[in-house]
Image (cartoon, rainbow over all chains, first blue to last red; front, top):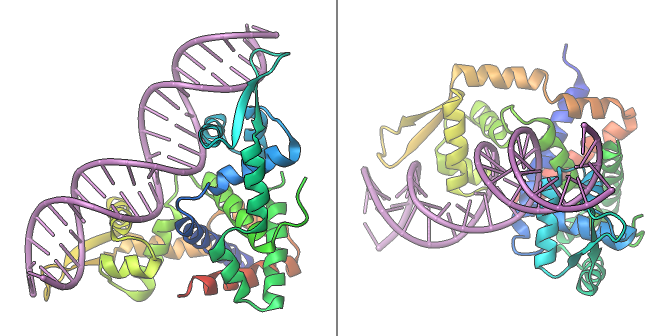
Length: 140
Length: 140
DNA sequence: TATTGTTATACTCTATAACTATA
DNA sequence: TATAGTTATAGAGTATAACAATA
């Protein structure tokens, strides 16, 4: 019982794995993608608790705690006490964090952009549609 | 709330990062993708030295050494001395490794297949083309 | 007792640098 | 010397379990 869509799924999965490994190798000393995603979330959504961020990214609270620690150590975000609930902590983006996101959105990830530039317009369109589909896969 | 001005390369890169994280979480105790790729290489290409495998996958020799250790510990591959050059080691797939690859290629990765099955035929075709493009990006 | 955040611990995958053995 | 492999060490990212503080 050999389903052709199974092979496609496997091939796609392994391509995603290889490409993410390649991308990671290409951006070693920059702010990591996990950190960029959280910073972008703080930028667009506003101050959030660590728990909210963990839910939003689909990672465990300790993992998010470590990411927030890294952002705080880099001066891109800060923690603040919640005045209404002493258990809660609010994570906010700093001015440096806002500047970083604005700059990042303008010019980032030279390797990936070079790889995109080497493609034809129709191929770029295919990857853009693929990105939309990947985002939809992650939705629930 | 996403910024519409995001470059498609950046959007695609972050989608790849998120999806690879999601996939990793979904397959915790199985043989890892890094190991599957090496085992498939041994299956298709034949016995190889660790250095050849590292080049083929684009990772460092110590990283490949660890992957080979894991495959050997799992009984899926074995090391053998090279009769012509005492410095060299040949890594071979075992009968169990061959069986594993055959089985893996038939049915694997339930989460990814379920995600694929939820798509339309044209959407699956888009992702299949995207996988080809990703592989091409990794070529050099 | 339930919730929120953090710390402790452990595992995978990756890298560079240093070491061993052989050519 | 040069090459192939391995070990030592380090760092990012993830997880579960345990702990502390507050509600």
